[in-house]
Image 1 (tube, helix red, strand yellow):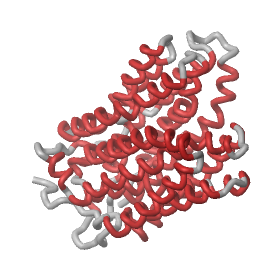
Image 2 (tube, helix red, strand yellow):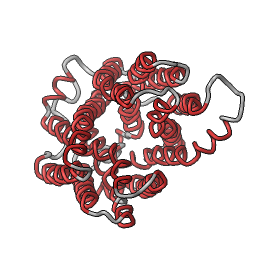
Image 3 (cartoon, rainbow, N blue to C red):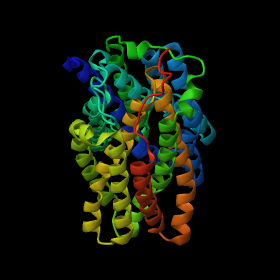
Length: 415
């Protein structure tokens, strides 16, 4: 039997609402810090850097706590509620030190939402009764497993992000002429993202109970998980993938302007990338059954390698824009592929811990990438980070194909 349409609908609405909030917040938070609070570029950098730094601690702590207590759903609701409260508070903080403290408080909740939401979605989508011994082929999604259907619900997060990015300017224009609250100008970002984040909560509370949501981990499971070769190698791969990718993504607007583009060009490219990403993630299931999570990771890394190499080489903005269509393949391959690979390699009772460790590995790579990417950009020219990212992703694509073992759960799955 398959999961009910209502289950898919609830999970889809959760991802839509939460990512709509991210679409309101992340593209414009740095702009708010600069224009409304008049922070210096170095202060803006410190505030934004606080989010991945705090995530290194918060993500594994929340994941381990959820697994040990068998409280994945209630932990996700707590993280969403705490993040919503912190978002609402941020818009009322007037100084650098206060906004830095508020961002740290926000990150302590918000950075755990995506890995926890992934774990909850995969647990809810899993149908253990369908998993019969000998039925699944190595490396492919197990019958009844949630991995092959995860893309169908996760794609609505991308849809929500796109809708928010497109609609926010119009919403701000209307809100800035109203007298509805204490927020002014770009400060309206914060109540909007808080409301979207709260709107994600009911859909998690309405999920039906399942064994995957309530099973508890055992003492020592995290240590055993970290020693399991598929998980260990995946974490290393995710770290180096984000080390290669994150600086080019964050520096992308600077490269576009260096090539003669402007804010309108940047906006059009992002909309185009998201429009391609939506069908790729949404129709992930048939492709996943053919290539498996490992093949999906290799394809994503290969796509990003070709994308960034071509981005560094081509100066014609029209051609440059169409090359960015490879972004959708990269996102579907790397970020969805790593989540599903972990799902197939980690015990059910360590699901939230495993997804949080993947997010922590990604955050570690992001911090180092952003720290070094800007220096390389300034020292060796705007194309330099893109050549390095392209070479790194192409090498990692080969590693993923040849070095990642077939995902399998450790023998000490259940006791």
